[in-house]
Length: 461
Image 1 (spheres, one colour):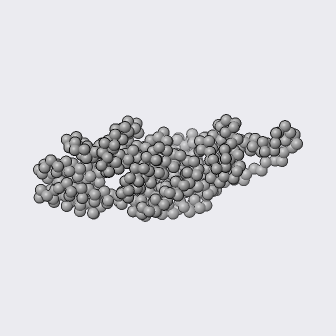
Image 2 (cartoon, one colour):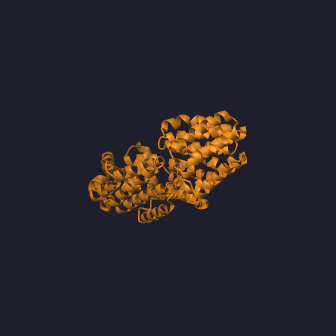
Image 3 (cartoon, one colour):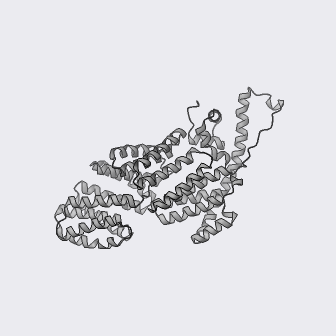
């Protein structure tokens, strides 16, 4: 392996844990000893988590210990391996014990209301472990797309745990890295909840922690990726793309295939919202080719959904329908009812585009009812407008008027912004006067989509 040929993340992890065969192990070690900053940064956490901050200096070797070696270089590799494996195994044992215990600790915390949880974390060393913080961060990331407020509470708990960790036990720079990660995830949950001011403050705190951390570029890339989503929903598209490009460069140099794919998917999502649909398709396909579905099946589902949506918007309806059909089983496996509902909505939009009006009507009626029950005002309004387009194409003015009256409860939603309500009132008034046209419906739909883009975060990124 040449100094330029970076080992994969799997090879590095296998090397650190002693799971690689002898020859690949030696190639990875030679690469690390070549002063490759990227790979040394990638292994920082595995070298140091849970270890004493002061590295041990190896004792001088006796002549007997040196005898029998083919060369000093050969010895250096073997000796380094022995010391590394011994240290990593000890660290890994500690972390595995913490991670095993973390499930029970989290279950104990979740029995209490949020304020009591935070008090327990602050006052009891039992809850002040790296493994528990990791688990809570994972839970927050998984929850925020389904239950944003629960995701935020979980992220707040993770921040409390991270802030309580001992810099003596875990190493001060590493604790700073984990604090940065926790604050960035809390910032992302605030972004999903459309609290952009709080999200901005969280990212500022995260960056201050990261500046005092290990300098690990992978931690930097994680933060850049999440911050890009905030910039996207603030309407600062160029900044979002710039942040994502920096993260992409880091993941490429580090050989992080899955994380690179995830960031490309985020960039495809940003491009989609920016109206750069052809670019979005290319990025989504690149990202899907790189991500590991077993590591994040929900991300794969969402990205296939975005790809089908963009293809449908570009008039490539049958391609969109084929993707939706091929991935339906994955939607079912993920088991997220909301994702399935969005899939049905998309299938209705494709049916409408293909002129299958009866099929589209049945789908829109069902998803409109489900969105209303879930109090998802924007989705319910958009489904109603799609149903209105079916009626408009069939000249069903009486049904249009009934539909307009049925939409009145949507106006009371706190989720809707003033501009969205004004657009819906315009539609309702036109329906009362038999003045609804397909072009008017599409104009109102476009208005709702623009307002929603800047007022509500998306679960995917």
